[in-house]
Length: 271
Image 1 (cartoon, rainbow, N blue to C red):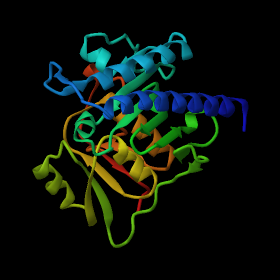
Image 2: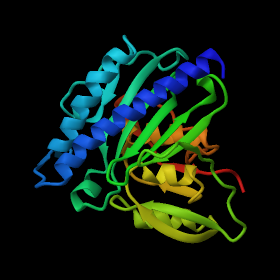
Image 3: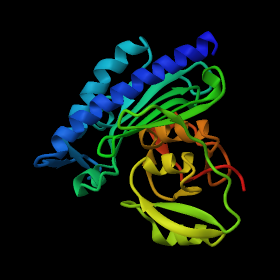
């Protein structure tokens, strides 16, 4: 392992611990009554979102001094930092979703995540996705951070193990659809051009991780998402050998005006 790869591994480990710390705070709220308010876009937000974000920001800001942090709840409150010119390959910024899948959190199905990603240029080069209720953490680092891309998962403190996308089976793909934000007509139109074995539902950025782990093959998202929803999952999936592309075949990039994503398709390895 070269020095740069070693630094990357250390940074990922620190990010994983931070995501797990935020996850512990989320679980504290999960175990009691959950108070819900509405943001300007009518999406739900809870005290757990805000408490987890506070924990993450307190560590991320000094972790890489000078690297701005774009976080969902702060941005919803009008506090979005300047992230610089997207044409520069040296631009870096964090993207944070302290509680991705608030609707899953409210329905208490366990499929909510803590997402932390580092963007360089317009690509997610480090990502951590932690599932507090399931005790599982996924990490991914891109080759751009030194050494080969590496995706790992750990469950409830066990030794981390490498994960990788699978090649789509000849009998067809396992396709994942959003549990809470499905666009049924658009999804069926998309699937008419795919060889599908089964269609399953899942919440939050867990869908990226299931493809990265080789438990599914395709995740089409044909509805609105924000960059903090997808960056960490994309980092894990890319490190595991997969891809996230817009419907015109371009890699999903970051630092876009408004931070909105177009429709995209996440895939494992080519068949």
